[in-house]
Length: 263
Image (cartoon, rainbow, N blue to C red; front, side, top):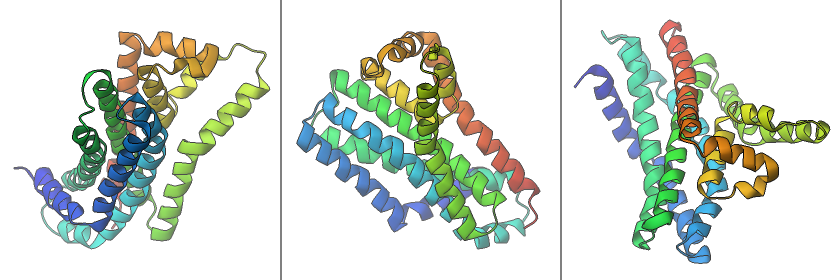
């Protein structure tokens, strides 16, 4: 077991003992169970969970990620006095948080569906897609949280910046897109809108889920354009690669800032 794995394992065990991680699991468990009880063990429950996942996953990953790294400051300073490479330390810290968040999210969604016996057939495929997109967003925004916490030494400012980042990705981006579409409604905007989707991981996950849930018709003609692109193997591959790039880019930026930072 290398240094990164040892640090990740220690951090993961510590995170899993945190009441916030337990609440994270219970929140998704309660919401999913509520959706299944009100909407039935069907695709309706999955559709109802989409917006919950797209809003809650980035928020929790950002806020908890920032707070976790600030709380680990003494631990980081202690390890920096040892012969431990900073890159290995950073990798362990990231995995030690991202993996527990992803696992508790996935378990909170999957357990109720398993209990209700609703993971067969089409519903099972769509639940898997929902969980997959949620895990991807967890990895993305945990990396963004680390970038924020490493670059901003002040805890209060860091948490505030994390909340502003969440508002930007989850709410403000869509508002700006809506204003652009309204202002230039007379122009063909299908291709620019397709490009805009890749500028926001939350929107990218949303469109992918709408395609898999056969809800493209809700987006009108633009939905037809999205359906043609995201419905193809090439389009799906590009989308998955884009989510991977959204994880890698902030992770590399945060790692570089961590390695060069004067603690």
